[in-house]
Length: 591
Image (cartoon, rainbow, N blue to C red):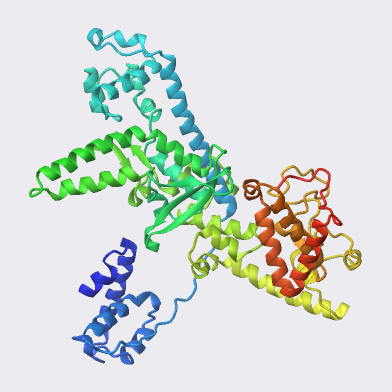
């Protein structure tokens, strides 16, 4: 036990579950093969016998936790460590969730989020329009007084009750007691009839909070656990170079406190950043009530330090968790009407993802049904897959999207049947194109190979134009789709026109040729001159740094460094001597 506690005492619950499973598996193995070799102490475990038996039983590295603990104990007793090497688990090639299905779910979640936030704003507007109206209970007529009221008075009355009782989320029984009526009477009273609507106009309920969380996961690609662990006191900072973005972050407990980050736009109302801001601001009164309760319990604990029961300590821990969480909500039917989402609550019937999907499917045709077996983790898979596809299958981009510490962690997300099939198809295509080029042209041009693999074919006319240095951009590259540049680079591009921006090292359509080095070196020299002649804040607020980095990477990966540096120096001299002037196309977009 001391060795388990020392190595795994601070580990998250999920890791402890894996350790427990590993211990159980080895114990079952020792019992099963007791007739082969009895195990009663550390000395009885044999690396050859039990190592072979473990491999025979299909043990993999997922069962290695026991071996780590075992060798810790043997080391303390000055015994040699056992060298039992278990194989890696066989990769499971699962399927990627359909992007169309994830998109449909995100669209429905966005609609519900807009309705919820719109409901809060409508409720606030109603209360403001009543100009401070309040219920005079001294002249309250139980029989007929409420007939002059409507839903507007219901909103004001509930907020008045919350204010007078210093409780931001009164339960139904507390509210009715304050009004002096019974639960089973006066259902024609607007203050009773509109109770649920009034609550919805103030705070999210558990289902609404879960739907906001799902939408947040769709937009960030985070794990559920990481999103639930966001701390409202420290969850964002401004983007270091672009004020249009904010950096959201949260600690990953199963990664030993590593931070998961996501860049989110500041302007769009339904961005991940603004979703968090909206729910945190709306639930602040609930958080204030929880802080007051926590302070009282902590003071009680100090006053009675020798007589604190487990129930009180559990409540203190729960209050601390809820205060930190952005996912606060009200559950009016429970004794503690204020709560925060936790993993188990997400899987209850009302909040379950499958319940949401069934509701969406009820409005769709028989041939447009969404997969009801989708899991919350599929949001992350879909997000990483979308970034991987958009980046033309770049592992680096997928690695950044996943927020993994090393590239090996990403492999589990890319071991999908679709990516395996895509890779096999691309390799077959590459081999066929390679031999076709050798047979027909007696030479191999990497740029032509790349274009053939990506596009399937290129015309003879296109070959001739490339050889004659035609159809080249101003930075010396070819272009796979000159009339359709990415919107991120050319937001004002008109359909059918040629690309005016031509910042090709940032563009996935670029085709690099053997003779592209000199124009690229010229562009890099231009970028360095720009940096010297603009204010540094302007430089870092633009996409020029990204273009500089991409151009440098392409040059140094494809040509000899000394040759590259000599051409850059050549063009820098030309730029500074005004023999060559920085080319700026009319109508070119700003950086």
